Amino acid sequence: MDSGQREILDIFTRTKALLRGHFVLRSGLHSGHYFQCARVCENMPAVTRLAGLLLEKIAPLPFSTVLAPAMGGLVIGQELARQSGARFLFAEKVDNRLELRRGFTLAQGERVLVAEDVVTRGGRVAECLRIIRDAGATPAAVAMLVDRAAGAARFDVPAVSLLELSFPTFPADNLPPELAALPVEKPGS
Image (cartoon, rainbow, N blue to C red; front, side, top):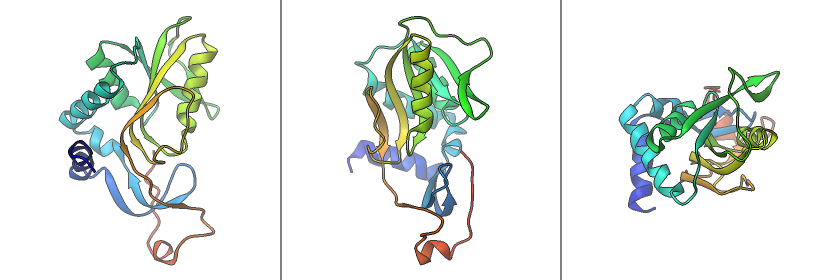
């Protein structure tokens, strides 16, 4: 792990965004680790630093708009937009599917960066990419704070993350005994 990765991990640990225990993830899988990025996002100096680091990584990929799925991507998405001078939009669930609401629209060919806090399987990112394409806009890239799948979630556009970590996940009917012995928490995403 290089010094940049250590700095990022330190930010997540210091803000209590990286938790240990027994968690049910949004996917329904169980894990001994959980990224509660809302905890890092309540610390604005940390958000400012993390967004700056993400922007350094995506510098060669031009965009004019940032789109984030609600709720997880809202804070980092807005800060990425603020620091880059881009427009900021967010997608919300409508009948269990992400959609643009509140009069948000995308223009034909508009270059859009998708911002997310934690990606495990990439479902919400894929939904945002669909929204962009359905509007005739162009997905520029995906920027995420944490790639929980360590690169296993694949997208057809460039994807960058500050941290790539892969913690084991388990279906509810196949838990290791040490995880099954802990009380279950469902912290929410």
